[in-house]
Length: 309
Length: 249
Ligand SMILES: Cc1cc2nc3c(=O)[nH]c(=O)nc-3n(C[C@H](O)[C@H](O)[C@H](O)COP(=O)(O)OP(=O)(O)OC[C@H]3O[C@@H](n4cnc5c(N)ncnc54)[C@H](O)[C@@H]3O)c2cc1C
Ligand SMILES: Nc1ncnc2c1ncn2[C@@H]1O[C@H](COP(=O)(O)O)[C@@H](O)[C@H]1O
Image (cartoon, chains in turn blue, green):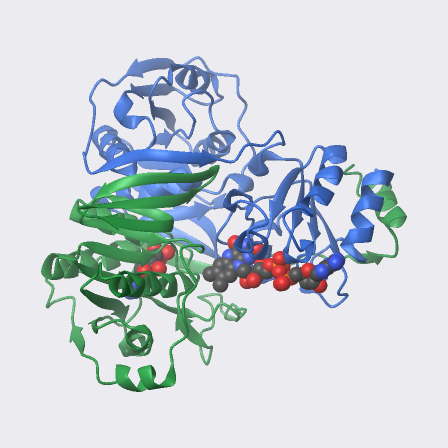
């Protein structure tokens, strides 16, 4: 078996999700090649070459790959695909955008967001917002897979010294162009890799009130998350949404504040190790999965919590 | 410009599914079905483009057994002009759906094809991207804003670290995210009117597509449920539990 893992990165550092996907690749077994495509991304290739279990790195460093446009990246991956039995990527928005395009060009299916490797062709993945777990066998020659990062430990960043081979072809479909981006800036840990997350829902009332979560997050070194209702209401930006159709997280500690606990929200956080819910409605469904529930008004509970931590 | 929207029939998002006792699949018998929420958003976007004078016609397509006509009628009631059902016994895998849709795209030549980003039953998030690959068209996935400007579409995409805007040369494929729009409700007179709008039925054979099986569902299980926790009566008690019992802070 021979696995091609598509690295996710920002041209400077390897996104941690790639290391989780690397663990899934190790569990499948076989030679692992990491493809780093971007612009001015040589440092990422060097990082990938050191990561545990990596035997080769392909570096496609060209302006056409700068903003990870799926049209260009898919053409590159397909060009490099010969000989690989598996093509993997972390199931972030980049991988989700890219991999089905790759699969279709190769005339194979895709197995999305696997959470466990059963064998080289059989995987587990949640369906119906995590209310059922499917075991799926791929019947295709080449297996195209996205990996749910929160379901696999991160591979060690050191351990290999793979050779980096440069790819010089430039695949440019010429049908799409990057225009602009609005990156959410935050000094807090990334939602995907935070040890502690505190999330706010519609109960927060306004965006300003998220400052109450900030003061608790400061004490715990936590990342801030949100429910869809809080994002839709414009309290916070879309990148904070946790859930079936947002980010999937599994921190050591997840604190849900003013969140009712709809299945779509639970789908994104119920694998957290310890769950705390603060809600003024003792009937809120979130309490059914919380290890520790506090029935209280968040406007009183949060300042007190910040003070006592 | 014509706009094509592909819609899927799925379990209503409020229903919690149960796994069948024999673990072969989930039990969908007598379960409330609906238009996939992301497809509702796709239909709404197409109708708005028509209302804005940008789209000339909105065509909706759905692939599956006769029951999917219910969702096509819903889309027609919301304002789509005509519908195409591609008859299959089950709901095919994304690559098969994409291959069938590619033939519809070939025949209809829409300037824009809009799909949901993900079906909320199997959570694949694949079909739009696959259709874009098969038709060689650019893709704007997870869109929260679509602006058609002449021969181009500016699509703002919801990505992990914020928002990213791309410019696509039309014809293009777009998949919808939750914040693209807020879908309207169908009015009763429109529901009546929709019954008379054209709905064409085709088969994969009519489109010369041979469906292929790419994966096999071996087992469906109920996930391990969490142990019910406890209620604490004060912030002090909570802090104490987190420190001394759970030891996470
Ligand atoms: C296709 C689709 C996809 C979706 N994807 C997601 C997703 O990815 N993530 C997601 O989160 N949702 C998602 N949803 C939405 C989901 O169904 C719920 O609507 C949403 O999670 C509700 O958010 P909420 O809990 O913040 O709001 P609500 O359900 O309105 O709950 C607010 C809670 O705050 C409590 N509260 C109010 N005031 C206070 C106070 N002062 N002190 C303490 N508690 C208070 C209330 O008791 C209530 O329980 C999706 C829905 C659909 C249809
Ligand atoms: N059987 C189907 N018929 C019509 N459209 C579909 C079908 N399956 C998927 N789609 C479209 O593809 C989108 C993404 O679905 P999926 O790739 O299954 O997550 C849906 O929101 C629909 O727009």
